[in-house]
Image (tube, rainbow, N blue to C red):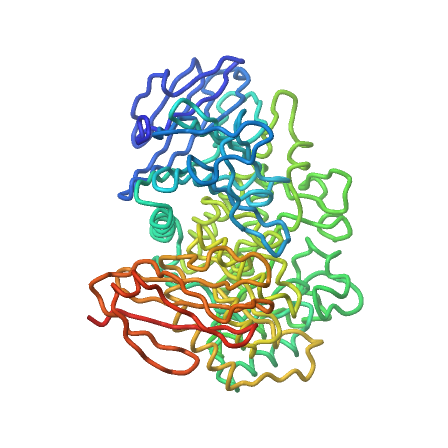
Length: 636
């Protein structure tokens, strides 16, 4: 399929002259391929997987005694994939949407109800170009692409937690694909080394659904740290609380979990617990907690004995600890910045960026975070990142060194995370960035996004947004999460938010007052969620398609092919006029018999696999804004 699939060709310019791995001599040194251009050494790490996927990562090293020539236009992959026919849409035409090769992209995390939604593009005359925005890897577009004719093609994932770009150009019966870090043009100093973006490619010949599920398996087995030694098989199920609410509110939330036997597994303490802000901060929407960002010391008035009593109480109640920090950013109003301005990059805005390109800054971040993990016995460290770093990186670049700050910064971030994971083998890192703005294969190999979208910050957010986010993101990621919000006993809302990681903030906020849900229903919904949760990282089938507006059905199927066990969840949205819909389930064995359990009525019934394949599965809901859920398993 791929020309020299074991290599995945790359290219770059050196001193203005284009270089390609196809034209350079390569030698093996240990587990790396090494290419030489004068004193410049390009080292390539690669991995091959049984599913046919290939992973590649480049390092550039100047072994000379003077600065290198300018390295630019670095494409960490630059190759072609052959097709039987490649059509090109001319200017003024929408393109070929019934046949031919298409680009299947995904909208990034852009603070919208339709975040992560699929976007289909025809191959354009002049090519198709995509990039992240602002220096966060899944803002703008997601760094995940499918190029196919519907049956065969390839999936491409870019591993760079910064400003990447990629493109696809039509060739004669082929598509050229290329990707890398955007706008690089730099010299390397003597003995200096940098890494660029990694790329993961998965070719396929048996349809898109199967390919995406192979990709999910690949991420789960070879990239994610979950289900590895010392770490949980499933992501956290959290009772989330606002850090500014104070010790009394958080202790009461822990007590409520125990008294009502709710079964939350982690206590999540979010922002607002630090600094020296005046007044109160009962939620993220109130108070001046934001101005203290960067002062990672417990607020003496809000927590007079630090957070130790809170996390000790959580541990006694059987809950692990999750603590929010944002160590890469500080406000100029915070004390730490005023004492250490040299550690930050300043572009004249209120927020400044900790310069992880510098070792002392990386050491400071590691020491700060590791200290909290040790002092409080944290099981999960929640890292947020709430602004665009690209202007800061660009300002810090030297002459003839465009992009060098970004390269060193992103590698520095990986270094800190790797040190934390090595120092605390039990640790789970929650990767948040104003929601899910840093989702790429490099962060997925070190972290789990427990909070995929800030659209769900409001206590009464639209649950249809959670449905759409889940469908769009599950196409690529086996692990991600969101929150239920305040109304935890709302069955439609709770099921809308089903994802491998889940949280609820119904008890951990001061202003919630006397809100008291139907705890019997809450316990039932939590038990149901915990039962289906292991399935939510298995094979995914968007059997209802991607929903368009509130007049449609929505939902999904997750299926464990090894156990022949699955779950179907369906939502008749609030303006949907049809009370029934027929869907076709994925993964079904024609020769098996499946027993279904209706989780609303308790009814059990059996269906032949052949019937499910030929006739489908009919879902009925007499009322709008209604959810239905069935679990099923092969019995013969």
